[in-house]
Image (cartoon, rainbow over all chains, first blue to last red; front, top):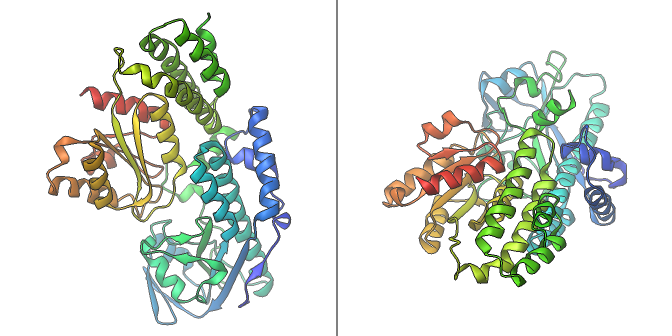
Length: 227
Length: 210
């Protein structure tokens, strides 16, 4: 695929219980005020948000700590490099909650309503990740039965965020309306980017919380609450 | 009047009620120091404790902090003439290369709610901006946040920059964020580390007293 896919917010099927769970309400019910606010902002998202994604598949070479695609070189840590080992092709991707999401985020931020901003932020994380899942589904269709790795992104798992700019050199200019600033950060904020290894011999879905070194991550906190 | 209504209003994040009871307390000439220390701060401590215990969540903290802030705004003009002294001035920011701001904003709300004056610099903040803000606002504490393992190392650069401009002794530096630890904070010579917004307030109070 070399085209930008625009998807509807509805197709992401994000429910208020999904959002509340991500906020920590696993066993405990939220105050009515909070659940009403989540419902209200989900409705708002349905009206204004325009998520999109893009991926392209390239040849590349993977070594013990480096990945090279179309003469652009990435320094990875050994964990990611090991997981990408045996990849024959590499999918470079982005997925974003979109410019419209960001504009409303900026409005809330300016208004200084930290509670609304927090709920909107959680919804944005959900949109970007769900959009990434949609992208992955389309990738799976395109590569048929070939195995693929999990998604790896600059800034995570020891891959330096500075390499984000290099990743975008391999993507169409301004893809999905995403800009990378001088600190190598994406704008809209709720965007994801990265690489997926494709090949018969790759380890699939191996990287997860059990390998992550973050002790205080919210995902671990929610898992703990679920037990 | 029953000042425990103020405690309950803040604990349950009811801004309007908190403002109403605070106004009643003022009209009855109750000392701001008593209103703040015996009821408002206690409510914030309780919601913070519930958060740490897993029985309250981020929205609860934000709502309580908002109610507390609303009451404090009313009390502020009276505080100059009372024995209430501001807790201190804190400059807060997410370090350069990192756009995550929810945890940082939560710390800001809790600090403000507990009587600190907060200068929220935002995200992607360079060492120069931290230094500039400390100079401009004469801050007592710098709070740095990072959510990425690849950006937390920038905290060391900020601390070194404070050393280089000769300001390190004038300001306490505390750090936080998901990938950090106490060991990391010690390694980069920060003055303290906290792993949540509630303990950040306790740490800030401790640093102000040291």
